[in-house]
Length: 182
Image (cartoon, rainbow, N blue to C red; front, side, top):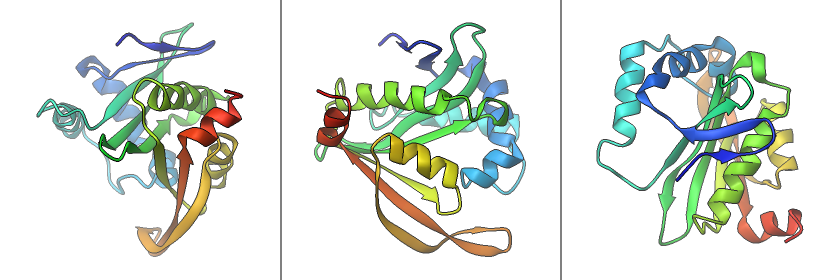
């Protein structure tokens, strides 16, 4: 499939040539705090093995895209759906955007593209996500996209010397289509 495009951004397949950008984005301290990431530096070799492992078995249970600004061709993040279950038509949403690109609407724009693709082309019925309860900006974004809070997981993630809650949010195809006026 070719890239997914909107006004300012493009979603294209992750490539080995993206390793430097992937490491840069996933190594940002703020990203690790907000996105429940690794509490230690991410090396280039770790990222190479991670990227290769995504498709080492030619599995069709995930899609991963680079978020690229169309004008500059700069990669500012990654977005995808993993744990795709074709029988039950569901998957797990994830997104990470570099600090300098946050707050500019790229998350909403890239998420809309991905959700259109997931509910349309991939025929998924449900997409869910986990988000740290104290990541209020992300929860606001997901709510604007139509995700609904479905519950909380207590003491789910250890960060800053304490356990934190994760919020489970879900979005159904019919709710997405209704929100989009279809």
